Image 1 (tube, rainbow, N blue to C red):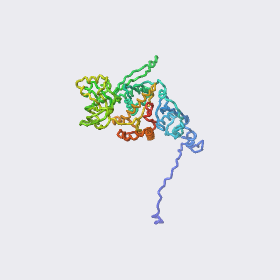
Image 2: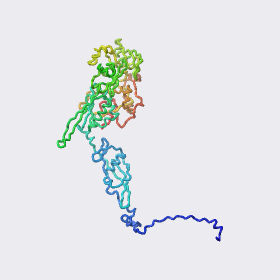
Image 3: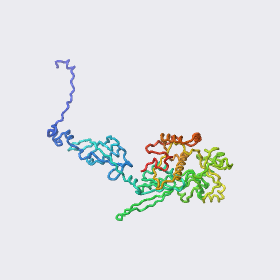
Image 4: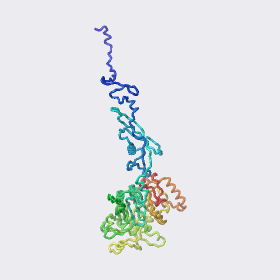
Length: 545
């Protein structure tokens, strides 16, 4: 028995506490001292009689890796040279540029890359710094990790594509786009489609010639791709030819230059068209005397008397081609004396019967004309409208002569065919709140004459008015917001040049269609767009590749 029974009942026994055990060196291993710092180490696994800290201080695993290198960039296209002859596009501090920097270093393939990142440098310093972390086994069982910096010098070097673009006669393929019409409205529309879809990004030069444009490419497949794009947006036909430039007699290697001739149909929007009677019956028995209201991948025709429409596809047109009876330059201004809509309506067209008189005949005679029109939803008595005056006009066209001699159609030829409503505008209109992009085009060897320059300005102004008035046409284009500073400047210039009478008559222009700001794309200052009215025939906002 215990001598102190009460104490035994109250005493707590401490739980056993585990003491940290020191790693014991196996009895069969030898302990040596580090030859550099004197720290005890395992002699059987020590690397060169050095402890781990001394190994990190004395061994450089990055030895043999470059600390300086040179990167080449083309200042024209801003592409980087990837040796030996490949040029890549890489944004600053991007993964592509980092991969290019790592490939430039010799000896980096012998180590394992753990991490790599850019170090910020001044943009104008033409220096790029990269911090790299690597790992490598220094001795058996010893792996070291080290971080170091590499500095790259950015040097300018012109790529072969840009060198060709600045050198004459270096193209491999050319696409010659032509249209035999007296105005440039179709080419202006085609230019906007090319810019919207960036179809010209592979061109090395664009040259403006008579009746069309020449697009030069450095490779044949680029030209073929461009021809395919034109075929998908416009009624064209193309023809390919090639010319032998050189040939190696030992290897039979030949070098060619390829030419693609692309011809657009000579029918434009708002043209008066006299179809062959046989063709008119084949495409839906439409009246042979029609108006072209749209040109897409096919020619869309409209009969104003019945609102019947018909499409002439590209193969059908080139099988039996025809020309327009009259174009927009022959339109005459008429005044609506009376108009009464009838019941038929088709889409945005409303059939109406109208009594019109020529604007030049008002106050001179009382001659009026009765006609049917498809513009019944926008015309009112007193409005001005543009149309073709057929009475007393001689047309040198075999299809129209066949209509006059036909017993079926001779009596249905109207005196007047109305085309579109006319909005009174000033010669120098106020600044628009929108603008269009233009391509960089090289002028021909001979500068345009003064009358040609005026005609180009007139065609472009007519195209801008079509964009304002036609919502369907505008939906296929990329229309941008005008710069606020430029718009205010143009308005001040207009107010300075306009007379007092013109300023008072601005209320008459309230009916002119305007484009809503919701339809416009954001401004693009980086493209350095100039004023459209002041830069007709000059290279504008588009970029040349």
